[in-house]
Image (cartoon, rainbow, N blue to C red; front, side, top):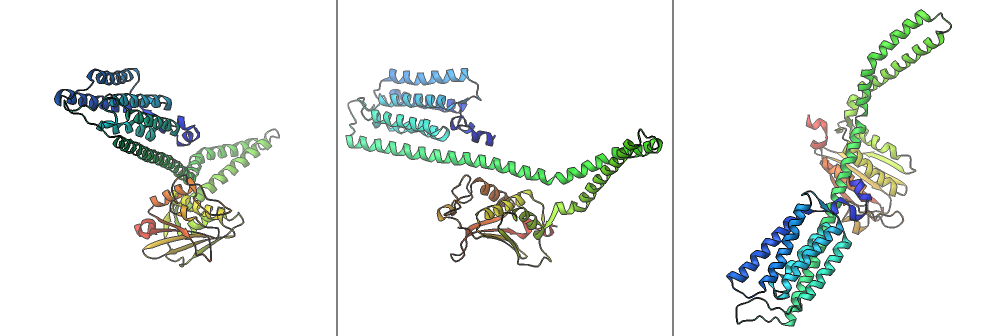
Length: 435
């Protein structure tokens, strides 16, 4: 779903469709709040206000909400144009109510920000920008409201024009800041959700690949019995029809091919039984050789340095996430190296460390602080290295799930290039330590 949505225009992305039931509930809350406020001001505080006009505006909002509840199911999601129309209607209704009750002098005028914030949190940017422009026009109109703020009889609150300007600036700046914040949070959450979905797909694919050996063994076992029967029948046919010129070649071919199939299945079974432990557990050096091998054919010198003797080296479970993550980091180093990539292995009783270094440009300072975020893709080959996008995010996420700590940086100025240190507590990754 994440891949499909990523290919769609922003207007049709599922994360940009506001759920109607959510908007309906917020509107009922607005109807209740507006009604309670008007009743308190009119009948408890006994302030003079245009009660009929206020009730008409509130009733219009309630009627539209009631119509939407009856017309559409609770699970209905609004297309961006429909959501824009409803939020714009809410903005106009609230602005009208404020206009006849004092304009910007009304302490509830800040609520004009609410539809704008909802739009920026859930709608495409072009609709949200249109709505915030409409909201700016509305609060400007409120500044010129001829209606007085309802107050005690015989008293009037005269708001100076400078104060009106200050209130306008306060509401406008609050609206802009809150809208920008809501938009950024919404976009980051959407990107993170899509990236995590892609991570799950990659991990699932890697797990399927690691299970192929087991499937081959199962197939060999299941096919062994019927193939043995075919081989017996072929031998009987050869004995009975071997002297008949019409069938001799066909029977001999049938028997030879059945023997060939048995040899293939025997090899599959033998490989599976011999490599079962190997498929489940790998020494650190064997795992790294397996990960590095596909990347040696690209004209880059790929060197594996082992700082410890292989005696007593960690034995790791064959973890698809770890192997994919390390492979992705090494592939990236090979892509951006000039001539050489060095992978260094080091371990002691408490820690296992893998260091990946290349002799490329390295990471740009502004990207180094954001490295590992999804969709940061400003790395370039010819000048300064930058972000690595979704691939690095997936690798980082998979390795951190296994308990690793990743440290990204650059090598010394005398030897430029990128440097990635991956460190695990040995007890988390060494199967010998957990037994």
